[in-house]
Amino acid sequence: MEKSRVLVVGGTGYIGRRIVRASLAQGHPTLVLMRPEIGLDIDKLQMLLSFKAQGARLVEASLDDQAGLVAAVAQADVVVSAMSGAHIRSHNLHLQRKLVEAIKEAGNVKRFIPSEFGMDPSRMRHALEPGRVTFDEKMEIRRAIEEANIPHTYVSANFFAAYFCPNLCQMRTLLPPKEKVHVYGDGNVKAIFVDEDDIATYTIKSIDDPRTLNKTIYIRPQENILTQNEVIAKWEKLSGKVLEKVHVPADEFLASMKGCLTNFEIGEDGAEATLLYPEVQYTRMDEYMKIYL
Image (tube, rainbow, N blue to C red; front, side, top):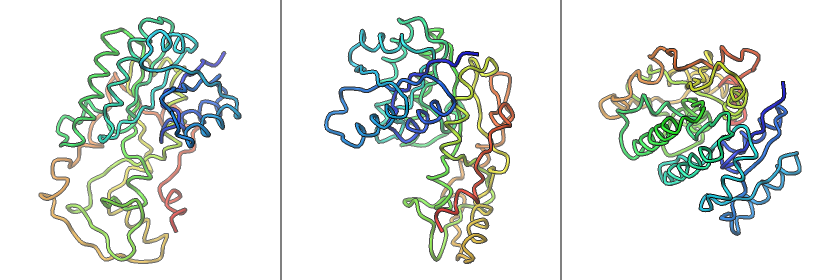
């Protein structure tokens, strides 16, 4: 079967660059939107040029130029948006409305994957600020997609490994603690940790799959469904060092989150990525953490 042509929007971002690499690796004709707003950002420009050297085609268009954006979208079968969803830059998510409008006008796109990739926003109504605004904006984009009758797939990958695993779920750092670790509540709330490259791999595998059309795919690697205590134990085994545990009472932190990340059944409107694509050898978290030793 001929591979779909993939247009990646936000291809120089944290997830976007991985989406581009995964699309190329899986043999898709890959286009990357190059926005004139890049200005003097030499790092982004050099990344785009490196994609070009790997076989991607750069398509120049601005989100503020509807005609140009429609022309860019019309060159692809699938559009993947990886625009930043960090709450400090959450206005970028709203810019996807322009992308939705362009896809609707172009009329040829067989699948749109909006920028989500973290927790399923439809299950995060309890979230607190400042993160809540990001989930609300993602739901607004979902409504716009569905009202426009655009074929879509939503991707939920829960916790990005680099942000939550090597630091043993500590706040305000990305590095493993050296002497002591804060344990939230009893440390037994389960979460799902996913390697960011695996997120991209599963995303691209889903784009031509009829089983994922108009559904949410949940990336749930069974060996990466871990409690904080289990993550800490893995690090202690790898490092050979036992950390002092400082317990933070549940009523001070994560009380409202308890059990919300893994305790729901996937219904008919969803699918589990590791079951759909068992051939993917996903990264286990003990392997992921080895680079931090």
